[in-house]
Image (cartoon, rainbow, N blue to C red; front, side, top):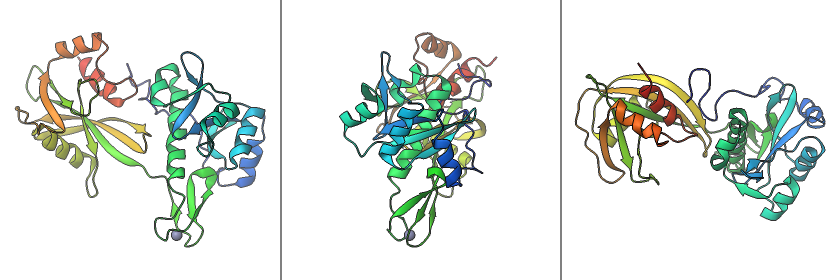
Amino acid sequence: MAGPASPPPYAGGWLDRASAHRTDPQWLARLRARPDTRVVPIWQDDCVVRGDPPRAVVPVGEPARQLLDAVGEAVFLGLDAGAGVFAADLSGLDRSAVLDLAGGDDIASVRSVYAAHTAADAAILGYARGLLHWIRNQRHCGRCGSATESRDGGHVRACLSCGKLLFPRIEPAVIMLVESAGEPRRCLLARHRASVLGEYSTLAGFVETGESLEDAVRREVAEEVGLTAGAVRYVGSQPWPFPAGLMVAFRATAVDDTPVVDGTEILDARWFTRAELAGKAAAGRLGRVDSIDRVLLHSWLHQS
Ligand SMILES: [Zn+2]
Protein backbone atom coordinates (compact mmCIF):
# COMPACT_ATOMS: atom_id res chain seq x y z
CA MET A 1 0.00 0.00 0.00
CA ALA A 2 1.27 3.44 -0.84
CA GLY A 3 1.70 5.68 2.19
CA PRO A 4 3.45 8.98 2.70
CA ALA A 5 6.85 7.29 2.26
CA SER A 6 6.00 5.76 -1.10
CA PRO A 7 4.84 8.08 -3.87
CA PRO A 8 1.88 7.11 -6.05
CA PRO A 9 2.68 4.98 -9.13
CA TYR A 10 4.68 6.76 -11.87
CA ALA A 11 5.41 9.65 -9.44
CA GLY A 12 8.42 10.25 -7.24
CA GLY A 13 10.79 12.67 -8.96
CA TRP A 14 13.44 9.98 -9.27
CA LEU A 15 15.60 11.86 -11.79
CA ASP A 16 17.29 15.25 -11.56
CA ARG A 17 15.81 16.92 -14.64
CA ALA A 18 18.75 19.36 -14.77
CA SER A 19 16.60 22.07 -16.32
CA ALA A 20 19.40 24.64 -16.05
CA HIS A 21 21.75 22.41 -18.08
CA ARG A 22 19.47 20.73 -20.62
CA THR A 23 19.23 23.99 -22.59
CA ASP A 24 22.94 23.58 -23.46
CA PRO A 25 23.54 21.28 -26.48
CA GLN A 26 27.25 20.95 -25.63
CA TRP A 27 26.45 19.75 -22.12
CA LEU A 28 23.96 17.23 -23.53
CA ALA A 29 26.49 15.98 -26.11
CA ARG A 30 29.17 15.42 -23.44
CA LEU A 31 26.66 13.60 -21.25
CA ARG A 32 25.49 11.44 -24.15
CA ALA A 33 29.09 10.31 -24.83
CA ARG A 34 29.72 9.04 -21.31
CA PRO A 35 30.00 5.26 -20.71
CA ASP A 36 27.34 5.33 -17.98
CA THR A 37 24.66 6.88 -20.20
CA ARG A 38 21.51 4.78 -20.51
CA VAL A 39 18.61 4.93 -22.92
CA VAL A 40 14.95 3.95 -22.63
CA PRO A 41 13.79 2.73 -26.06
CA ILE A 42 10.10 3.29 -26.84
CA TRP A 43 8.27 2.00 -29.91
CA GLN A 44 4.84 3.43 -30.68
CA ASP A 45 4.14 4.18 -26.99
CA ASP A 46 5.27 0.74 -25.81
CA CYS A 47 8.51 -0.44 -24.28
CA VAL A 48 10.96 -3.08 -25.46
CA VAL A 49 11.08 -5.99 -23.02
CA ARG A 50 13.04 -9.16 -22.40
CA GLY A 51 12.71 -12.16 -20.08
CA ASP A 52 10.01 -13.73 -17.95
CA PRO A 53 8.40 -11.82 -16.39
CA PRO A 54 9.05 -9.26 -19.13
CA ARG A 55 11.13 -6.32 -18.00
CA ALA A 56 12.00 -3.21 -19.96
CA VAL A 57 15.32 -3.21 -21.79
CA VAL A 58 17.38 -0.12 -20.94
CA PRO A 59 20.76 -0.31 -22.71
CA VAL A 60 23.82 1.30 -21.06
CA GLY A 61 27.10 2.55 -22.55
CA GLU A 62 28.01 1.57 -26.11
CA PRO A 63 24.65 -0.13 -26.91
CA ALA A 64 22.93 3.00 -25.59
CA ARG A 65 25.01 5.23 -27.89
CA GLN A 66 24.20 3.00 -30.86
CA LEU A 67 20.52 3.37 -30.09
CA LEU A 68 20.76 7.14 -29.88
CA ASP A 69 22.78 7.29 -33.11
CA ALA A 70 20.12 5.21 -34.86
CA VAL A 71 17.34 7.66 -34.03
CA GLY A 72 19.39 10.84 -34.29
CA GLU A 73 17.47 12.95 -31.83
CA ALA A 74 18.09 12.17 -28.16
CA VAL A 75 15.47 13.12 -25.64
CA PHE A 76 16.99 13.89 -22.26
CA LEU A 77 15.01 12.62 -19.27
CA GLY A 78 17.38 13.51 -16.44
CA LEU A 79 20.36 12.54 -14.32
CA ASP A 80 20.52 9.50 -12.08
CA ALA A 81 23.45 9.92 -9.67
CA GLY A 82 25.18 12.00 -12.34
CA ALA A 83 24.61 9.56 -15.21
CA GLY A 84 22.46 10.67 -18.14
CA VAL A 85 19.14 8.95 -18.78
CA PHE A 86 17.78 9.46 -22.29
CA ALA A 87 14.79 8.18 -24.25
CA ALA A 88 14.82 7.07 -27.88
CA ASP A 89 11.72 6.94 -30.06
CA LEU A 90 12.08 3.95 -32.39
CA SER A 91 8.58 4.28 -33.85
CA GLY A 92 9.99 4.91 -37.33
CA LEU A 93 11.52 1.41 -37.48
CA ASP A 94 9.68 -1.83 -37.97
CA ARG A 95 9.13 -4.12 -35.01
CA SER A 96 11.83 -6.69 -35.76
CA ALA A 97 14.43 -3.98 -36.34
CA VAL A 98 13.53 -2.46 -32.98
CA LEU A 99 13.97 -5.78 -31.17
CA ASP A 100 17.35 -6.33 -32.85
CA LEU A 101 18.60 -2.84 -32.16
CA ALA A 102 17.47 -2.65 -28.53
CA GLY A 103 18.19 -6.29 -27.65
CA GLY A 104 14.64 -7.20 -26.64
CA ASP A 105 12.46 -10.21 -27.32
CA ASP A 106 9.06 -8.52 -27.26
CA ILE A 107 7.17 -5.24 -27.12
CA ALA A 108 4.81 -4.55 -24.21
CA SER A 109 2.75 -1.68 -22.86
CA VAL A 110 4.27 0.24 -19.97
CA ARG A 111 1.21 -0.48 -17.82
CA SER A 112 1.33 -4.22 -18.44
CA VAL A 113 4.88 -4.52 -17.06
CA TYR A 114 4.43 -2.09 -14.16
CA ALA A 115 4.56 -4.71 -11.41
CA ALA A 116 7.84 -6.21 -12.66
CA HIS A 117 9.72 -2.95 -12.02
CA THR A 118 10.86 -0.87 -9.08
CA ALA A 119 8.82 2.29 -8.45
CA ALA A 120 11.68 4.36 -9.91
CA ASP A 121 12.06 2.29 -13.07
CA ALA A 122 8.30 2.22 -13.69
CA ALA A 123 8.13 6.00 -13.23
CA ILE A 124 10.97 6.53 -15.72
CA LEU A 125 9.25 4.27 -18.27
CA GLY A 126 6.05 6.28 -17.91
CA TYR A 127 7.95 9.56 -18.17
CA ALA A 128 9.70 8.40 -21.37
CA ARG A 129 6.42 7.23 -22.88
CA GLY A 130 4.65 10.48 -22.09
CA LEU A 131 7.35 12.80 -23.38
CA LEU A 132 7.94 10.83 -26.60
CA HIS A 133 4.20 10.62 -27.26
CA TRP A 134 3.95 14.40 -27.05
CA ILE A 135 6.96 14.91 -29.32
CA ARG A 136 5.62 12.49 -31.93
CA ASN A 137 2.35 14.41 -31.99
CA GLN A 138 3.93 17.85 -32.02
CA ARG A 139 5.87 17.77 -35.27
CA HIS A 140 3.97 20.78 -36.56
CA CYS A 141 3.05 24.13 -35.11
CA GLY A 142 -0.54 24.47 -33.91
CA ARG A 143 -0.60 28.13 -34.94
CA CYS A 144 0.87 28.16 -38.47
CA GLY A 145 1.26 24.49 -39.40
CA SER A 146 5.00 24.66 -40.11
CA ALA A 147 7.52 22.09 -38.90
CA THR A 148 8.86 22.30 -35.34
CA GLU A 149 12.30 21.43 -33.98
CA SER A 150 13.47 20.11 -30.63
CA ARG A 151 14.89 22.38 -27.91
CA ASP A 152 16.07 21.80 -24.36
CA GLY A 153 16.77 18.11 -24.79
CA GLY A 154 13.26 17.51 -26.14
CA HIS A 155 11.28 19.41 -23.48
CA VAL A 156 10.33 22.27 -25.79
CA ARG A 157 9.58 22.43 -29.51
CA ALA A 158 10.01 25.60 -31.50
CA CYS A 159 8.22 26.47 -34.74
CA LEU A 160 10.73 26.96 -37.55
CA SER A 161 8.49 29.56 -39.19
CA CYS A 162 6.68 31.69 -36.60
CA GLY A 163 8.90 30.89 -33.61
CA LYS A 164 6.07 29.77 -31.34
CA LEU A 165 7.34 27.66 -28.45
CA LEU A 166 5.39 24.49 -27.69
CA PHE A 167 5.54 22.89 -24.25
CA PRO A 168 4.48 19.36 -23.32
CA ARG A 169 0.72 19.15 -23.10
CA ILE A 170 -0.57 17.80 -19.80
CA GLU A 171 -4.27 17.07 -19.36
CA PRO A 172 -5.49 17.27 -15.74
CA ALA A 173 -8.17 14.91 -14.52
CA VAL A 174 -9.74 14.49 -11.09
CA ILE A 175 -10.35 11.17 -9.39
CA MET A 176 -12.35 11.05 -6.21
CA LEU A 177 -13.56 8.89 -3.42
CA VAL A 178 -16.99 10.08 -2.27
CA GLU A 179 -17.69 9.41 1.39
CA SER A 180 -20.94 9.69 3.34
CA ALA A 181 -21.36 12.45 5.91
CA GLY A 182 -22.85 10.38 8.73
CA GLU A 183 -21.54 7.51 10.85
CA PRO A 184 -20.65 4.83 10.12
CA ARG A 185 -18.72 6.27 7.22
CA ARG A 186 -19.34 4.61 3.89
CA CYS A 187 -17.80 5.29 0.51
CA LEU A 188 -19.52 5.39 -2.83
CA LEU A 189 -18.17 3.34 -5.71
CA ALA A 190 -19.56 3.01 -9.20
CA ARG A 191 -19.58 0.35 -11.88
CA HIS A 192 -18.49 1.89 -15.17
CA ARG A 193 -19.57 0.56 -18.53
CA ALA A 194 -15.93 0.84 -19.67
CA SER A 195 -14.66 -1.34 -16.80
CA VAL A 196 -13.25 -4.54 -18.24
CA LEU A 197 -13.57 -6.48 -15.01
CA GLY A 198 -16.96 -5.06 -14.02
CA GLU A 199 -15.57 -3.94 -10.67
CA TYR A 200 -16.91 -1.03 -8.64
CA SER A 201 -14.38 1.80 -8.59
CA THR A 202 -13.86 5.47 -7.82
CA LEU A 203 -15.23 8.29 -10.00
CA ALA A 204 -13.01 10.26 -12.37
CA GLY A 205 -13.17 12.78 -15.17
CA PHE A 206 -11.26 15.46 -17.06
CA VAL A 207 -11.02 19.03 -15.85
CA GLU A 208 -12.69 21.43 -18.27
CA THR A 209 -11.61 24.92 -19.29
CA GLY A 210 -12.62 27.50 -16.71
CA GLU A 211 -12.86 25.02 -13.83
CA SER A 212 -10.85 24.65 -10.65
CA LEU A 213 -10.00 21.11 -9.62
CA GLU A 214 -12.66 21.33 -6.89
CA ASP A 215 -15.23 22.55 -9.44
CA ALA A 216 -14.44 19.53 -11.59
CA VAL A 217 -14.85 17.16 -8.62
CA ARG A 218 -18.28 18.63 -7.79
CA ARG A 219 -19.44 18.54 -11.43
CA GLU A 220 -18.30 14.96 -12.00
CA VAL A 221 -19.91 13.73 -8.77
CA ALA A 222 -23.17 15.40 -9.77
CA GLU A 223 -23.03 14.12 -13.38
CA GLU A 224 -21.96 10.56 -12.64
CA VAL A 225 -23.90 9.69 -9.48
CA GLY A 226 -26.32 12.59 -8.96
CA LEU A 227 -24.92 13.60 -5.55
CA THR A 228 -23.94 17.01 -4.18
CA ALA A 229 -20.35 17.13 -2.90
CA GLY A 230 -19.75 19.31 0.16
CA ALA A 231 -16.19 19.39 1.47
CA VAL A 232 -13.57 18.44 -1.11
CA ARG A 233 -10.10 17.59 0.18
CA TYR A 234 -6.90 17.02 -1.81
CA VAL A 235 -5.27 13.62 -1.29
CA GLY A 236 -2.43 13.39 -3.83
CA SER A 237 -1.58 13.20 -7.51
CA GLN A 238 0.13 11.01 -10.06
CA PRO A 239 1.35 11.48 -13.61
CA TRP A 240 -0.75 9.39 -15.97
CA PRO A 241 1.18 9.37 -19.24
CA PHE A 242 -1.46 7.34 -21.14
CA PRO A 243 -1.09 9.53 -23.03
CA ALA A 244 -0.89 12.88 -21.23
CA GLY A 245 -2.83 12.86 -17.99
CA LEU A 246 -2.19 14.24 -14.55
CA MET A 247 -4.53 12.52 -12.08
CA VAL A 248 -5.39 14.65 -9.06
CA ALA A 249 -7.02 12.68 -6.27
CA PHE A 250 -9.58 14.00 -3.79
CA ARG A 251 -11.88 12.84 -1.08
CA ALA A 252 -15.34 14.43 -1.27
CA THR A 253 -18.08 14.36 1.37
CA ALA A 254 -21.58 13.90 -0.03
CA VAL A 255 -24.31 16.06 1.49
CA ASP A 256 -27.07 13.80 0.18
CA ASP A 257 -27.50 10.08 0.26
CA THR A 258 -29.20 8.52 -2.77
CA PRO A 259 -27.09 8.06 -5.89
CA VAL A 260 -28.74 8.38 -9.30
CA VAL A 261 -26.81 7.03 -12.29
CA ASP A 262 -27.32 7.67 -15.99
CA GLY A 263 -27.25 3.96 -16.88
CA THR A 264 -25.08 4.60 -19.92
CA GLU A 265 -21.59 5.61 -18.77
CA ILE A 266 -22.21 4.54 -15.18
CA LEU A 267 -24.25 1.37 -14.75
CA ASP A 268 -24.59 1.37 -10.99
CA ALA A 269 -23.37 3.19 -7.87
CA ARG A 270 -23.69 2.12 -4.27
CA TRP A 271 -22.34 2.71 -0.80
CA PHE A 272 -19.75 0.38 0.69
CA THR A 273 -18.78 -0.04 4.35
CA ARG A 274 -15.17 -0.44 5.48
CA ALA A 275 -15.86 -4.13 6.11
CA GLU A 276 -17.03 -4.59 2.52
CA LEU A 277 -13.96 -2.81 1.20
CA ALA A 278 -11.74 -4.94 3.43
CA GLY A 279 -13.26 -8.01 1.78
CA LYS A 280 -12.44 -6.65 -1.67
CA ALA A 281 -8.91 -5.74 -0.54
CA ALA A 282 -8.34 -9.26 0.82
CA ALA A 283 -9.38 -10.65 -2.57
CA GLY A 284 -6.93 -8.28 -4.33
CA ARG A 285 -9.83 -6.45 -6.02
CA LEU A 286 -9.46 -2.98 -4.54
CA GLY A 287 -7.93 -0.55 -7.02
CA ARG A 288 -5.63 -1.00 -9.96
CA VAL A 289 -2.00 -1.72 -9.07
CA ASP A 290 -0.59 1.27 -10.96
CA SER A 291 -3.35 3.80 -10.27
CA ILE A 292 -3.86 6.36 -7.54
CA ASP A 293 -7.37 4.95 -7.10
CA ARG A 294 -5.66 2.25 -5.07
CA VAL A 295 -4.12 4.92 -2.81
CA LEU A 296 -7.52 6.60 -2.38
CA LEU A 297 -9.30 3.36 -1.53
CA HIS A 298 -6.67 1.89 0.75
CA SER A 299 -6.08 5.12 2.67
CA TRP A 300 -9.83 5.36 3.34
CA LEU A 301 -10.01 1.70 4.31
CA HIS A 302 -7.14 1.91 6.78
CA GLN A 303 -8.10 5.23 8.32
CA SER A 304 -8.86 4.81 12.01
ZN1 LIG B 1 4.32 28.38 -36.29
